[in-house]
Image 1: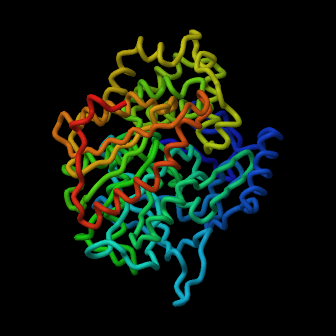
Image 2 (image 1 turned 60 degrees about the vertical axis):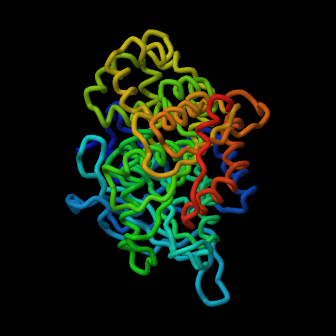
Image 3 (image 1 turned 90 degrees about the horizontal axis):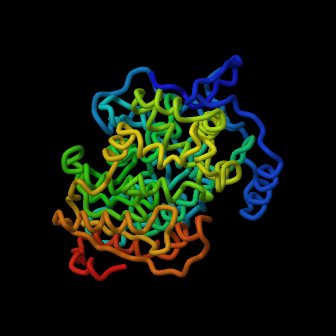
Length: 467
């Protein structure tokens, strides 16, 4: 059994394992103040504890996770099979003139997938049946959306952010920023399914952050699970589009590579991969010392869970500060990580005072693990639009462009978009987040065109002259 990352409210105090989180507690006053300010700006109140049906609920940083997210002991055999479903109230919705809720009717999901080790895993997520008619050609399609980085705590799950766009707990802040893309697809009449990824939401394991196989499988199986939702208008023949930015861009890119062998029954029409972390060695260097430095903890925690043989290496190379950071980050959302570990340098976490990049360079097993995570070794079987900001220094531009080059060399149908913006500040995430906003409309239009049956036009020929 994989270690839990959350604590039961009735649990007794004990000394946690390296990858098991601390008992949730209050964080600094500045985080609380920031949370209140964020709530005031967004017009959203602090989220109360969720009503859990279990007498022993899972609590992550003061937020009680609904009992729905506790996986059962046994899972179905088929990938994408529904384990359970229930209505999901959308945090932002309006009554339509015809009596239906706008932009749609949501259902919370738990479905079966297969993890990177070949074992069964319960994954949660959400399906939204749109109220709007599909405005493209043919029958209603499905968009399988992979969220950008949300964190590693269960309270950060994208499906929960659809219900509570702003979540505030005891030292935790989570904002559902990808909800904007979800609602834009719904407005176009496309059905949307959102995956929480392995272990983000589901309480039986840690979230395996940026694990390409776990993420790719979870996204493809979400598309399969959507077909079985009561009231869903999509069918196995419905065209499917994959959409994701940042962590989500890596997940959609991975799913595009794995679809032909893992899920050939998914009728894939196109994939949008924005700012994909294709080469984790380079991405790690971009994150180290940045506002998102806490993501290093999520990566280490997840990979050590997937491959238990890495735990001894992690223990040997981390000092007490590093071990504490790994425990702490394992229940954090993005807001917590920025306030708690923003601009942290990994040299302060290691036993020998060297950077994480230097530690990995000296460990063949760690190098091999990262090599296995590299995207671009497989050819996507449907058109892909890959966008990357030329100033992106968090998920570095150069490694994202290289993924497009690798796919083009394999004969992929690739539309490459270099998002040209001025330098908006080094290591503070603005160079990474700005392309998400400025390119989103074009990305959604491109994907809806693929779902409408329009042919993509590859620009692989232009790669030598692209920035």
